[in-house]
Length: 531
Image 1 (cartoon, rainbow, N blue to C red):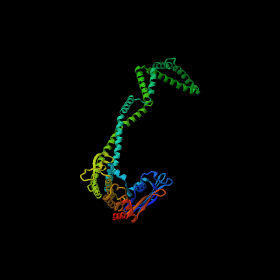
Image 2: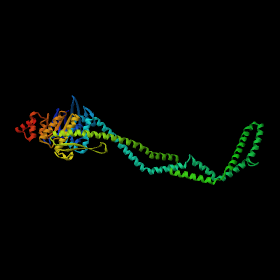
Image 3: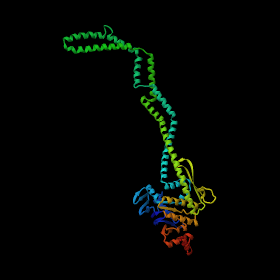
Image 4: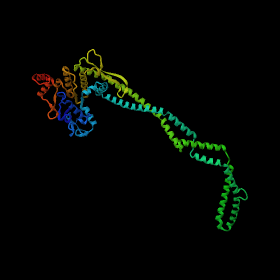
């Protein structure tokens, strides 16, 4: 339960500490006295978004502290608002996410804003699901599994569609790359082939000159009795004979022998080379065509044809390889689709089952709140799957006899909406067992016997949770265990005064709320309300 709430330098409050009790607490006062500021401060310290404009004196920080007690253990949450907000949990700096997580177990604040959002159909599925989760924890696991699978499903669907679209857009590029690859493969260019072909071309282009030059050189070396080899042979023979007489000629003799053999060998090579050369116009044309093809491909693709071919092949593999990716993604897509269908059907069955239970409870509560002829039904219609499943959930209500069920947002009046919301909150509180439930003017639009029914409903709820209620209804205030009176003062400047009323002051306040004045007659009326 909320034990104390300390507020400093917040909107119109310079400094105040409110003490709350178990059971039923009311915050009461004239319209505009500042009651909602208290709830706003509580909402703020529990992580609600707020601007720096709430700081009353800009030279000082705003400070809010809430002390909760559960089973004798205190939890202290504070927030300081200056240039930035600082949260503390039991004196230690904390994050807003941590505070919001703790809030879920401590306080449920229901305001008029929530009332308006609750009547919107988009919120009904969440209300139903929250009820089911509290009754059946395995339903929450189903929801988590479904959402995880749905998220993966949508990601795969997005990737799959992108791949298929890219594949269509890349068809022309694939065809062009395939053509380039065929062109290079058909050419079958070998390493250093161009250089080798050019060498052969040089020979064939000058075959006559080479043939004649080689043969004339052969003839000069070894062609007749006057040849160089013949003359060198005679010299070699002479020196060989002299070397037998003088060993100093041995080296020269050896050199002449080597020279003689080399010249003979060279002459024989030139003879064979010359005779082997033939003019081949057909081969000459082949060489020119082949060299022309290689040079054309190099101009088109680049100097290193092997490297360029590898690039083309890699790019082509990337584009055509997406077919394999599509197959794998489609398999995952179908697997997830099957899982989603099973999960969504299970979730829908839970919703249909518990919607009947929740509808019956709401009807019972509405009858206790003086809507005796009320009918309530939770409509569940199947729709295309989304992140919440396959169900469209909408609250349908009829508050008068012989009136057909219609959407809650189109049928109920302001006072009826408040009672529907109170019925929902009462049911959810029974399930949640949240420590503190705050109602901010949920009794708007009701009076008389209905107010008494609302008060009794809150008393019933106060047996399970601490109730804090902002109200103008004297009938409701009369049932409170703790009566907090709020007034706005204008002494030196505007401020808010907060009092916890004793029995006598409570009667005066009830009298003032009931008639606008305090007299013996209105005091007597207040006593009857308390009884």
